[in-house]
Picture 1 (cartoon, rainbow, N blue to C red):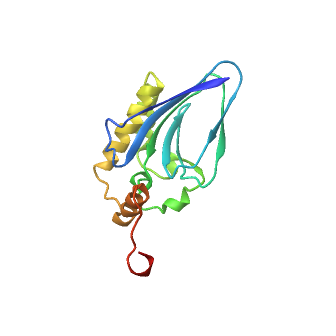
Picture 2 (cartoon, rainbow, N blue to C red; picture 1 turned 45 degrees about the horizontal axis):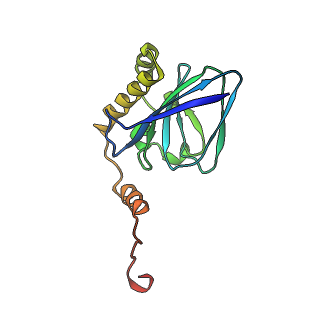
Length: 164
């Protein structure tokens, strides 16, 4: 069996915090094993009525996709997990998958909206709107954003002094 994976650019949440929305649907007979590799991001994932926060991961892991199963998600950029977890230390969700209701508020309303959606793509839009609403009240950590910018640079970082 295989799966169909698709990413979309964020439309309802700031691209500064959201890398993309995505969907994945397992097609064909039998199970599909999806290897997930670390990318420094945190994902908010919907699957069969459940919501979970995943990562950031330090190592790969495997997700088993049953035939016909569907997933939808919002990928938060490195450093943006606090948007969802609030003041909780982000390292508490590193390398784990946490039910969203353990780290966020008003998850019942979000679940209702996701349940009313008619496709994985529509669920991804619901999740992105949720993140967008959180982003309106979010003040990112300036130090984390600076580190992320440094990692994105294409030219060497000059440290000055004897290192420069």
